[in-house]
Length: 102
Image 1: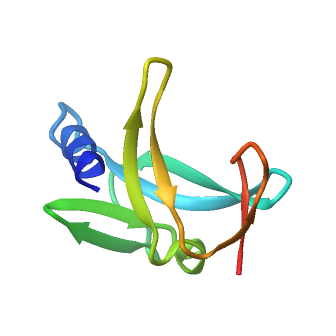
Image 2 (image 1 turned 30 degrees about the vertical axis):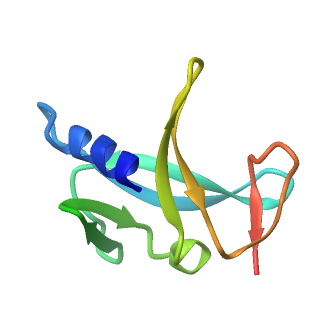
């Protein structure tokens, strides 16, 4: 989304430019949870996605779980975070911490 692009551009033009690597981990009652980390460069098998002048790195093991997803940046009075709209989600836990893909 445009908000995610703005946030990612801000991260990449900081004093130490950082890339976001998106993956999934086994976690929570529904099975999978998003995992984001800062990296300097992609790993050997990672997928690099570039859109609107912003690069995001996708862990190759997470590719099929998140393909087609939309990344957004959400801010409110209590928190700020990246959020995802994932068309592959079959089920999610009540708190939204984890999900299952079809």
